[in-house]
Image (cartoon, rainbow over all chains, first blue to last red):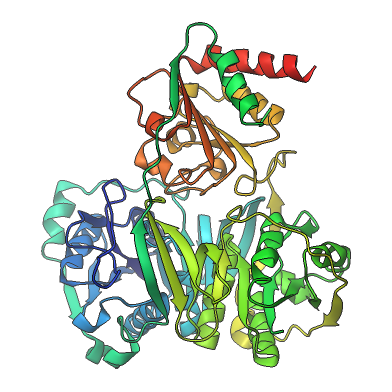
Length: 259
Length: 319
């Protein structure tokens, strides 16, 4: 089975994150950048499918030159190779343009299964898996907490507000996963060494046949009008429990009319 | 006045609260038209409620296919309604499915999309709260009409009663719309509590709760306040509470009127999911816990004594 995993380099969600003041894009220069956490679960699932039915796992990303660091991190877990779409013209691309680029990059790989994290920690949009599927004209089984592969039949348990749905499709299909699906492996020393030698193909917009004016800030379908840091919350009253903490708590709730 | 299409999210056979909130926002841009894309027989009981919140029209697209296939039937119906009605905007409740419908629709129409907006102005400028609520961004769709998904609980639903005109709509699916089949829908441990993202009160427990059994006091406090129960990642990863109740960067984002954090330290992972709550109360035995930096009212103490006392006090006041 040919498996593609879509990954993204994101600013570390555990550190301070900001938008650039000049063009309101994500500030990647000052942030510490990491592989999007949810993508590790997608990579793990890809490796498990490969271990069960055989095949090859290709990591695909779109991002600036330094995004190759996230690709190497991904390869350390065990995928076979990677494709890195990078081009100056991509800076500031909207979701529509990003999905166009990813779909083009994936199409030539002719995958049976495209795995992705359900969301990235920066934009948290959850839109890319369905956008890519829509462009490729294939099924999307999204928000999976469980994936079963039987021949060319894919079945997922999709997490919903009420519980879960069982959703099924034939390959090829996009499957996006939540962190409830598995426990990602840590890269082994061997994996870390091997990742350095694994092929990473760098692809430009011209290679994909996409014009620079369809992407980036110039070709974006949405625009930021203004961005401002939210004023920090002011810490309020704090009391130390001296045996009456529960009563004090209720007094506060009553004063705020919650009780 | 121009129409504004609002996709109806049905919950338990009724109109969900996020749908009423989307109808409320839609009225700023034009005249709301509710769109129901569901199995046959779903729409009829919803119409009065949709009218109560200002839906001048209700488009009813009912078929077995609408429920059988994932996401695509809703995108297909909305795409054809956009072509027919040239609406001023399309609003969709920002559930997982809602975002996915918006994603498909954006590609079909080659129309920009803004997800999880917390406010929408009459001129179509949408406000989003990003990076764990630390940055507020105003954006607009520059290609096409405003196509936005609306974060639950971001605005208060306000009635504007009218009697809707009901229009049946065909569910016409293309070959690529019938690829992902829903074979089963399973409701898990349905509780009487409000949906986490929609609740006006959320009581959440963390590692400090200590065990699955001890979550009973979190639930008791939530029930007394008519709230939902949530959990930090530390609590769900420890198996204290089911994953689907996780609040934070990798879980749900909530923005209730009152958020009570019990035994939650307030790591950025968690704050990402709750720091836009209106009032925050914290109980933690660690005086250095970062949750106190956010809390309007904090108690440094052991939740295992503070919470049962609070429960008794509320019961006493209610009696």
